[in-house]
Structure formats: structure tokens, C-alpha cells
Amino acid sequence: MWTHPANPALSLVAVDAQRSQDLTAAVVQTLRAAPLCTATEAVFDLVELVRLPARTYRAAADRSMPPHGLFAASATELASSGLAVHQHDAFAEPLAGLTIVVTRSAHQVAPLAALLEAAGGRVIAMPAIDIAPPAEPSRVDAALLSLSPANAVVFTSENGAERTFAHVRALGLDARLFAGKIVAAIGPGTAQALARWGLRADLVPDEHVGEALADALMVRLESPQRVVIFRATEARDALPRLLADAGHSVSIVPVYATTRAFDAARFVTLAEHGGPLAMTFTSASTATSVLDALDAAGARDRLAGVGLVSIGPITSAAMQDRGVSPNAEAAPYTLAGVVGAIVAWYHGSRTFTGVTP
Image 1 (tube, rainbow, N blue to C red):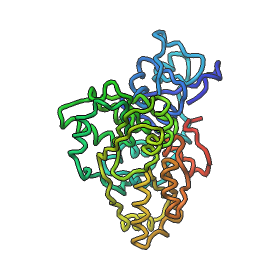
Image 2: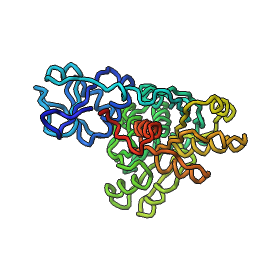
Image 3: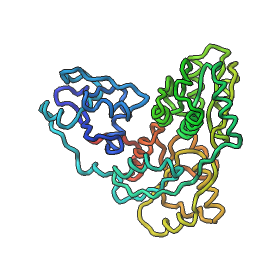
């Protein structure tokens, strides 16, 4: 990203890809971090997908540039406007030489791995958790079939969104089931998971934690209202507790369960190899699974020198409850934020803006 030479209030970014997974980590972070983003017709659909649920504005037909904010266009379009398109080599692969252990469940590794590899990192998947059906799957079906009286539905994770819609599809239904209800997602990753099923989140809090989601919902809801929360079997109670305290009727529907799966012996072997090493934690459950597995193997000391990167304060708190402090915490609490936090740790900086100079 660079500033328009004639207008310091306007920043430019070249979007040269047909698919979101082909974008570099720096471009993804830049797009997601921009409060105001305008995109040309050529790249609008891709930029909008990357930025969900944040709004993207469509540029004028004549490709005239907005007065401020971020302007996204293809390299060809920028070049036709007389602007040089380039990337500094020092920032092309900021994670070159670093191995990163990704502890997300196996079916969720790919999106984070793609961002890390685009930034030059070597990714090794070591899932810390597996996702399993809930103890009472029929309860999910019953909740969906009796959803009509609900005023709001809440999804607190990508897994929750995906597992809920697996039941929706099995029932022969689709996103229209949620018509007329406030749809809330705890963060952009969850909102994107819903969007893949044709459901757009009406509400995503600026801070991706239960407390912020509860505050945002209470602004929208007139008490008393009925709220249905689709989530993991075991999860923090802050969101339902705060909503119930405000007078709302809250139903919790467990749509999946997490089981521990971290291979401590494999990690020990990797750590003994030497070389720069980082490990990502994208949920409290991944953190506790890893630390408990290493403790059981008597191998917690193998974390010495490893960059431990948390996706946000809830995950960091789970680590600290086990006596381990993260070396870096994502800001914002997204996968792109995780990449930025790793870059910051790896290069010895406390902050990283997610933009190439």
C-alpha cells in the first residue's frame, strides 16, 4: 500500500488475484484494516468478500478516486492512472525462514495456512482439537424447526456456523429460515462462514468477544426478546449471562463439541530441530489442549524460544490461566491479525500495521 502522491489522505492498494486465497497476507491485512474502502468494478467482488462484514463502496464508473480512505484497484487500472505499482522486496515475504505451527482443527487449517505461506512462512499443521457432533443432535434440529418465535440468532464461532448449517441443509432448508431475525456473529470469520451459506450477519461487534457482542445486541433488542445462541457444548457463559441479566430469554443450542487432539511428541521432535519457530492459538480450547498435552508429556519446557501468538484476549487469558503468556496478540482478533502479530514478534516490533511501506 502507498499514499497517492497528490493526496496524502488517500491510500492505494493493488489487488491482483482472482481468488481471495491468492492475495498476499499484506494485502489481506490492508483491506481488512481499512475503516473506509472503495473498490473498482474489476476487483469489487473480491475486495467485498475479503472485507466481510465491513462495507465496501463501489467506485464510480469512470474509476475516479475518492478523496480519502483506501482505494483498491487492479495493478493495470492503477498503472493506467499513471501510478507505479510495486512492492518492496523486504516486505514481500516477512515470515521467510520461520516455521509456524497451526493448532486449529484440521478442517480449519487452510485459511490461516494460506495467509502465512503467502507471507513466506513454512506451515506445519498440528491440530489441537477435533470437532465432534453434540451429545444430542436431535436438539439442534428441534431448535431450528421451532425458530419462528426467536427475535435474534447468534453464532459464536465459525464451527458453530458451519455445524448449524449442516443441520439446516439436512432438514432440506436454507438461509431463509433466519429471515426476519437479527443475525449476530462474534467476528468477521464467523460472518464469512455464514455468508458462504447465503446468510449475511446484521451485527458483528468491533471487539470479537462475548461481552462486546452482548452489548451490541442489547442496543438492538427491546426487552424482553428471545435469543437463540448456536455454539459449542463448552463455552464461556458471558454472552448468555449478560443477555439474561438484561431480561432476555436465552436458549443455548450446542451444535458441536471439541475433543483434544494435540500430538505433543511430534511437537517435541520439531522443537528439537532448531530454527525460528512460532505457534498460533486461535481459541481458548486450542491453547488448553496444547498446554495440557505438553504437561502430560513433561515437555512444557520445549516452548522456550517459541513465539506463542494468540488471536485475542480470551485465548490469551486461557494461556495465562495455565501459566503461559503469549509473545504477541492479534489486533484485530482475526486471522489476518494473527499474521500481523507473528510478523511483529518475528521482527522484534511491538506493532504491525499490516501494510507494505
